[in-house]
Length: 404
View 1 (tube, rainbow, N blue to C red):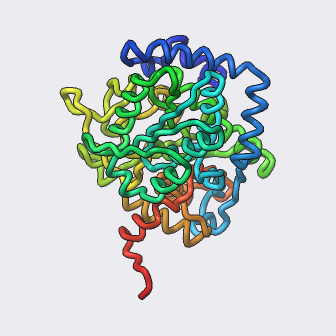
View 2 (view 1 turned 30 degrees about the vertical axis):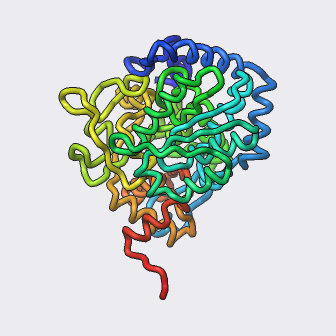
View 3 (view 1 turned 120 degrees about the horizontal axis):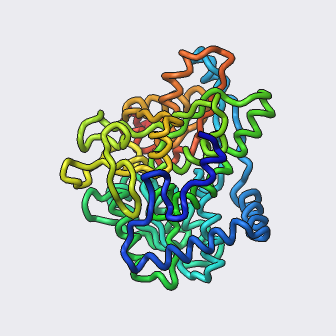
C-alpha cells in the first residue's frame, strides 16, 4: 500500500474499502453533499489555503516543535524519543487545526451558527474559540458525566460565549453528545454548520478532518529529517475517533520503513462495558453516520464504554483507521487506565510536561516499547494535548492532596 493509493480514498461515496459511507437521515443528505462540494472547492482555492495557513501560523501557533525528550529517553534506556508538541497550540490541543479549517468553510457557506460535540472538552473549546473569533453563535453538546470530569473546559467554553448543553441521556458521554448535535443540525441546517471534531461520521467528515489535521505529520516529517537526517522508526499516537493519530500517520503511509501504532483506551480491561478499544473488542457495524469497528453486543446494541480519558471514551473508531487496520499498515493496541495515569505522572516529573490523559495513553505505550529498541532508533509520539483539564481528576486518582 502506498500513500499515493491512500490519497485516492475515500472513493466518491466516502468509503475506505468497506468502511465509511454516509448513513444519515434523508434531511442531512443534501447538507452533506453541499458541504462536500464546498470543501473540495476550497481545497483547490489558493485564497482559502492562504487564509488557512495565515490563521494556523498567526492565531494557532504553528508550526509546533518536535521536542527531544532527553530525560525520558535516558530513563527508559532505549530509543530516542521525540514529542510532537500539539499541546503548545492555542487552546491546548490539536483540535484547533480542524476547527480553523471548518469555520472558514462555514463562512464560505454563509452559516451564522456552529455546533459541536465534545468529550474531553478540547474540541468544544476550540470550536467556541473560532466562533468567538469570527462572531458566530456557538452551541456545544457535552455528556453530563464529561461536564463534571472536565469542568474547567466547560467554564472556558462559556467564557468564550458558547452555550454548553449537558446531555443526560444514556451513558451521558461522547456518543450521546454526538446524537444531540446531529438532532440540532437536522433542525437548524439552513443556518448551522456542524464542526464535527474527529475523523468519523458521514462523508465528507473523515477525509476533511484528516486533511485539516495532516499538518501535524507534514511538519513532523520535515522536522525529523532536519534534526536526524532520516525518517523515524516508529510513530505513536492515541486513538479515540482518531484525528490526532491520522494527522500524524497520513504523510508517512508511503514510507514502508516507518512503523505506526495507534493506542486505544483499555480502560479497566478488555471486558464488555469496561474499555473503549474497538479493535480489541469491537465488530463491524454502523453508528452515527459511518460503518466501522464498533463496540456492540451480539444483537447490535451499542455497549457502554469506559476510559479515564473522556476524549477516548467512544464506541466507534474512524473508518480510515479501520481500513488501515485491515491493511495491516497500522498496528492498534491499548493502554489501560492505570498505565495512562502512570505515564501522565512520569512525563510530568521527568520532562516538566503535563500531558492530556488522552496523550498519556501514547506515552504509556512508548514506555513499553522504547526500552526494547536500540539506542539509535527514533520514535515520534504525538502529544496531542495538554493536561490542565485533567489535573484535578488525576490528583484524586493518584492520591495527591492540597497542603494544609
